[in-house]
Image 1 (tube, rainbow, N blue to C red):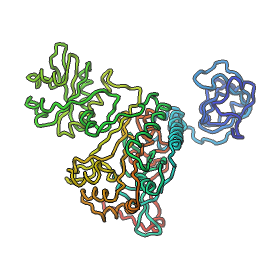
Image 2 (cartoon, rainbow, N blue to C red):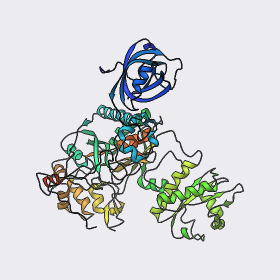
Image 3 (tube, rainbow, N blue to C red):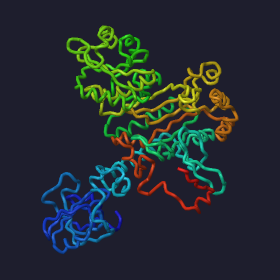
Length: 586
C-alpha cells in the first residue's frame, strides 16, 4: 500500500484485531446514535470499513465534515459485536484516535445519493460523472472493462498477433459515416480527419510484410447515438492476418472470445467453436434479420401464396411471413402490446390468430382464414393451443417486421428462449452489390474493399446482383459485434469492382492512393475483423445502455456535458487554423 495507509477499506479481517491501522477514503455516511456514539462508513475503491466514534470530542471533530470528503482514519481494529455479512470487512471495526480531512467536500447536498446514482436523471449523472463513478456498481463496470481488455490483449498476443498503433490524424475517407475534421495550421484550407477505423492502415501493414496485427483501436464517427452505439468515439478489437482466408479469421475469434464471455459474463456459457455459419439470405428468410438471436428457437415461414384471396386487404399482392408459437396462451392485452411494439420498432403492423382446443382458428384475423383453415394448419403444422404472428408488405419490409415480431414473441413465450447463455454465429455470403434505395443505381452493399467470390471471372461474367462477397458479420444474442472481410488485395480486381458502380481507376487512385499503390508492389491475400469492445462489454455486463460501460460517455446528442464539449473557441485560435465562422441568417 501507499505510505498514507496501511490497508485498504476491503482488506481488514478478524486476524487483524488488535492492530493499529491507517485507512483513507471517502466519508460515505454516519449513523449518529448519541453525542458520543456514532458509526462512520469509510469507502475507497476497494470496499468499505466501519469506524466507531466513541467520544464526544471525536464526534464534534466530525460535525463539520460533509459526506464525500476524503479523510484519513488511524486507530485500533477490534471485533464487531454485531457483524455484517454483507461486506467483506463485516467482522471488524476500527476505533479511531485521530481523523484528518484530506480533501473537503464543500457542499452540504449532493446532486444525488452516491449509492443510488443510477436512479438519477442521465443528464445529471453525466454532468457529475466523477460522483457517479464513485458508486460501486458504476465503478465495477469500468473495472470489468479494464479486465476484459487486458484478457483480450493477452489472448491476441498468445495467438502471435503484434500490437501496433495506427495514426489518429489521417485523411478523410468514405467509410460510411461522417468524419470528424481537424483543420491544419500549417496547411491552410486542408484538414485531417479522425479515423472512422484503421481499415486502410491495417491493410497497408499487411502489404508491408507484417503477418498478424491487432490493437484496441479508437474509432471516431460523427453519428447519432443508440442504446448499443456511443456517438463520437468507440473502441474495437481490430485485427488483420496476412496470407489468410475467412476460416483463419473465424478460428482466431472462436478461440479468443468465448473464454472472455464465459469468464466475465452474467451468463457463464458461451458458444464453443465452430460457431454456426448462416448465409445472409438464409438469415433473412429464416429469422427476418441478419442479426439473429439464436437463443430463440422460432423461425419464419413464407405464407404469401396461401394468404392471397382471403379478403384481407393488407395481404393482397404482398409478401406475408408467419411465426408459429406452440403453447402461447397470452392475454389479448399482451398480444396487442406485442403487435404495437412490432409496428413501433419496424414500421410494419403485426397480425395474429390462434388455434383453440377444438382445432379452430380464432382471434385476430381468423375470420379471413376460415375458407383456408386446413391449408393454413397444414402449412404451419399447427395444433390446439398454437399461436401465429404475421407481418406483410414488400418482401424486405415483411421480413424486417417478422424479425422484430419473432424476437418479441421469443421473449414473451415460455420455453422458446435460452436466456442464460451467449449464442454466437457468423453471417456469411453477403451480396457484393445492391440497388441503392435513394439513387436507384448499383452500389456496394457492405464493404467496397471485400474480395468478390469468384474474383475477376465473377465481375466480368455474372449479374452484379448475384455476386457474393467474402464478407462476414459476428453476431451474439442478436447484437452485431463486428463486420469483417477477406480483402480485395488485387489492384486489377479492385478497379473492376469499382468500375461496376461507376468509378474508374483514376477514382480509385484518388480516393485510396496509399493502399492502391501499396497493393501494386505485391500484396498478400489478407483478411480481418474488428469486434466492438464497447458492445462486447455491454453484453458481458448485461447492461441495456452502452453508456454504462464507458468511463466518460457523451450524451445522446454527442455532447460531453461534464467537460462542456463541443465548445466555442476564441478568434485567435480560429485564425491560426484559417477558419472563419459564418453565422446562419436564421
